[in-house]
Image: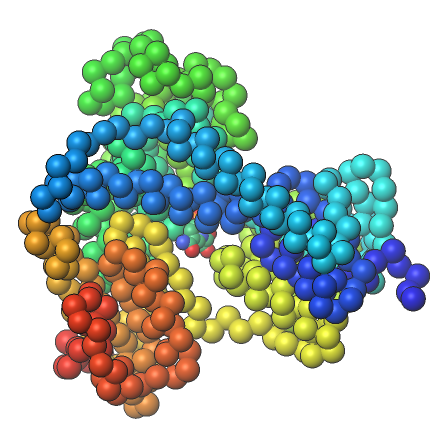
Length: 489
Ligand code: NDP
């Protein structure tokens, strides 16, 4: 028996922290404590993936109803009722939070509903005044969205606030071109909000395959999202009398009434900026416009401030992230860190993997580095982007490649005259014939890429794909029927 209160103390009850805590306690028999200052489940369950995906589902019904009509169904297009959805959403999040708490209890983890800071290499101070000692401390404190450094930025909301809106705005400006900006542009457009998006770069979704980015941008614009690339916000303030959101035909004084949103009447948003009515915005292209809301989807920052890390000798990187080695160990040997707080690959399943590898290494005597190679992921735009491995641009810098690519109108929507296109693309090494990357832009591409990811992780060659029989008629059959490269590089 050690002299410490616990073998492990985890700071943060999100996906990574909860998994590490319950596996260490449940499977390795460790005495584990965990502190969470907000809600159990963290970003993914409470303010991210889960509520976002439910909003994706909600937003897709608009098209489904329209398409059903073209297919011969006699359906009446109704209106989306945010309060109905929001009530059910919050009920689901409460249920999931309960599941997370029960999982921890069930595996014998002692939980503390308070903030924890690190006092020394083996001690945490809790905001309830208690101090707890532990042989190991695991920081899994996650991250938070950030607004740009500009005057009045607090007039804008961030992704955390979306789920707490009393009502949907009529119009919104989304600033940013990453995952969150593009996903919410599609979601809110689907729910009937007039969406304008400003992205400062030449093309949205920087870092993804260029052809895939291009198609998604086209599809978003075609669906009605007013996307402006090479454009940023330079100035913002509360709209003045007479300045009105474009296309709404209502004056500033009327907007709160029309939208019926208490947050629009100058009250404090839940967790977000203070809204004082519509917002006047000036863009880099010289245009000024008024929007009901502005959403800053301008990146996230690790939650390391005020944890007491640097004072102890834990190294932080330029974005405030905790610097760790391959085993998630920090510069202070008893302190480890996993998930978004380390700003490696900020995805829930990766945080969970990092938590599991930490337990293997520290509590099961099996040093396990985290494998960050070939991680499949999806961007839940409409259409979705599913991706694994290298982009064409990164692969051709590395070696000679063949590119196999096809873009076509899928049967389901081509039948009713919609112009939607999908894209299937494989990047193949000329030397080894291994598939280095796969990029799919299509409805449900997230589901497809999970399967392709297995083959690619196993080292499948293009010829392995070729000898797999197609499932007909599907969109994804094209991934095994592309005979000739469209180009080599
Ligand atoms: P990203 O880093 O993906 O995107 C941030 C965007 O904001 C970029 O387009 C960036 O532009 C822009 N930006 C940054 N600073 C400014 C500024 N001062 N003014 C204007 N624009 C600015 O961050 P997100 O917040 O969208 O997502 C964070 C992470 O969360 C993702 O990287 C991902 O790991 C994870 N995530 C994953 C999801 C999924 O798996 N489906 C969904 C949502 C999030 P530029 O490109 O020029 O830098």
